[in-house]
Image 1 (cartoon, helix red, strand yellow):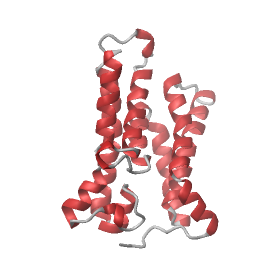
Image 2 (tube, helix red, strand yellow; image 1 turned 90 degrees about the vertical axis):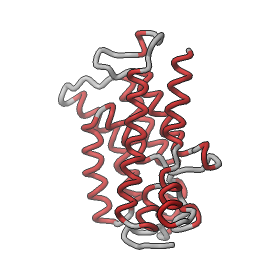
Image 3 (cartoon, helix red, strand yellow; image 1 turned 180 degrees about the vertical axis):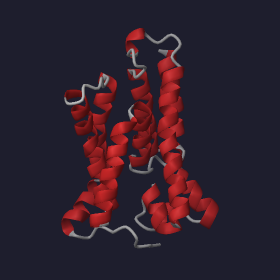
Length: 215
């Protein structure tokens, strides 16, 4: 139990690191939440600070998810064996990744108002099963190129995760562990929830398109 609590706390605190807020403060001396879309995420950094800072923030946010899974994998002293599967993908790793994603969305360092969890969630899946992320990135690129909506592309990529895993298991015979499958099923629901305002703007035709710098 102590190990589980330690993993949850460490992963949450790592996920909570407000990368976009820190980048905007250090590079421009501004609060990213008062510019662009007002969201403390990589997309708003792209819009407000440019490609370089945006890419850097996105990669760091992604690595927060990867690091959380690594913590869940190696800090497992005293954890029951059933928390782990033969291929090394266990519930503790998924729980750690989920804690990091929630930390990114509800960061303790910034009044529990952070980003939307896309990059950090992608980092968790990269560490658990990289193939679905590669397919999701391809879909993301296609949707962004054709529609110029980052929010729509993010939701499409998230929705592809469980479908990709089902196809890999049923068609190609890949052994997808239950913890990884459940995480991939949960991710789209979380991403759609954090993008609920974007969904409303998409339906009303007022959503911002990528490439338009604001703030």
